[in-house]
Length: 167
Image (cartoon, rainbow, N blue to C red; front, top):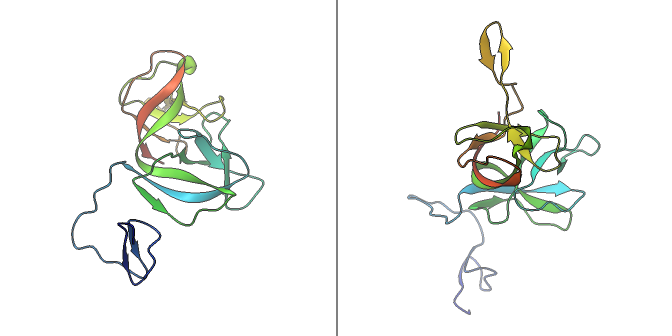
């Protein structure tokens, strides 16, 4: 039917449509490298925008806008490699792991490859995490980490590739 294959369905809605459970005894190859899911939101979330759990609504996210926010929940994803859940008008694709482009703000400090990133005061953007001195040990604030920079940004705002690893 138009080049689409259906397993368990006579009218496939995608190139490969499996109606029922699937088991894969090998690898699944995906062009894009993040894992995302459909999450409720009350606003439009652009790709690469950093999001946090909404304090006012259950099971919903908003653009992150506070530095070192422990509510950090992921990043808006335009083309996830794996997408979980079901689409709806009030939902957006939010990546929570893998490699994805992220909006960053280097006005709070230049970002180097390998830097740990956190939410920034710039809505929807991440910034470099500055460690705290805790008894002579440099420690990054628990619960605030979004991921590691895979590309640098010396100044201004932009998008860089980030390895998401919420902690």
